[in-house]
Image 1: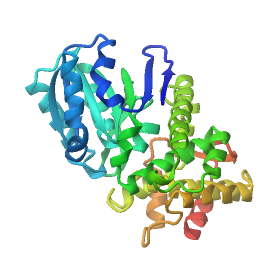
Image 2 (image 1 turned 45 degrees about the vertical axis):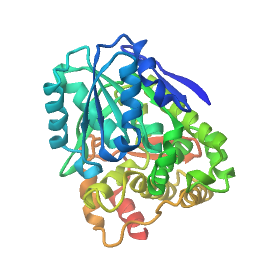
Image 3 (image 1 turned 90 degrees about the horizontal axis):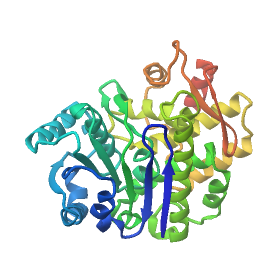
Image 4 (image 1 turned 90 degrees about the vertical axis):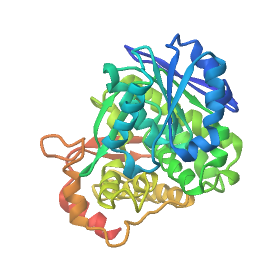
Amino acid sequence: MTSVINVNLPEQSYEIAIASASLDQLGERMTSLHLGKKVLLVSNPTIFKHYGERAITSLTAAGFEVATCNLPPGERYKNLNSIQKIYDSALEHRLERSSTIVALGGGVVGDMAGFAAATWLRGINVVQVPTTLLAMVDSSVGGKTGVNHPHGKNLIGAFYQPRFVLIDPDVLKTLPMREFRAGMAEVIKYGVIWDAELFAQLEASKHLNQLRYVKPELIETILTRSCQAKADVVSKDEKEGGLRAILNYGHTIGHAVESLTGYRLVNHGEAVAIGMVAAGQIAAALGLWQKEDVERQNALIQKAGLPTQLPEGIDIEGIIDALQLDKKVRDGKVRFILPTQIGVVTITDEVPADTIRKVLQHM
């Protein structure tokens, strides 16, 4: 399979290349971008063990000088201490304005490498090489970079587009099952907010909870349609002035759940799944969404092996309070993305706190 999707932006457009066995062509594909010779490969020890040497071999063969920086894995390390480690490596290896940071890993690595690239020397190149389903379909595309603050997710960050995104579906073979399921949450999200055809194809698949049970043709569809959906939205609204907010479907309550559980109990995809269930119920409670569509969404989430209930013992008032720290709050009002039909959503800040509370108590 080989697909190329263009993200068309006023200042810097770029390509997303989706191709099997393409990790070994990373260096060759980067040479056409006319980048400087110095590359800092940012990863984590688990990913590096699987794919680090292949990436380095490919980059070196293409004439790049490669240094590496491995960060501890996990959302709880997505903080300014880890960014400092990238800065220290950048300094040690004398990265220049023409140099490139290559992010080899999941969303955590991609977000941090992107933020470091955005801020080192006021901006150097970044190339995203996502290795998880979630990063492939979501976080590697669109230029949102950043780290967490102890009181909220991604509160520190910048919009900073990559020069290129390389997706090799073959690397999903080493992805833990729980991480594959986490990625499916974002895929289901695209079906609900933008692509009813993708939603229908997911419904037609017997299994969604393990890579080995999902047909390769469906994986190809998932990657191309999800990336195309994100590229379409980002091309229309790069800095989240309006439309792009729909990509946060399920994330408003999801981020609060992640934050309140210390980024240890549920992963990002699981939190988004919980957030989508909550948003769907809120939409139904406000009369925006049909009950049968709520059930279709929740059935798909369950088929992907994702949670539909809040973690036990979580403080509901804590969630309501945490919503006020969300980046999408305007004039003290929380903006929700709520579905009106499969493939269509609306953005509203007119959701009564009591409605949110009732839905969360029901979950």
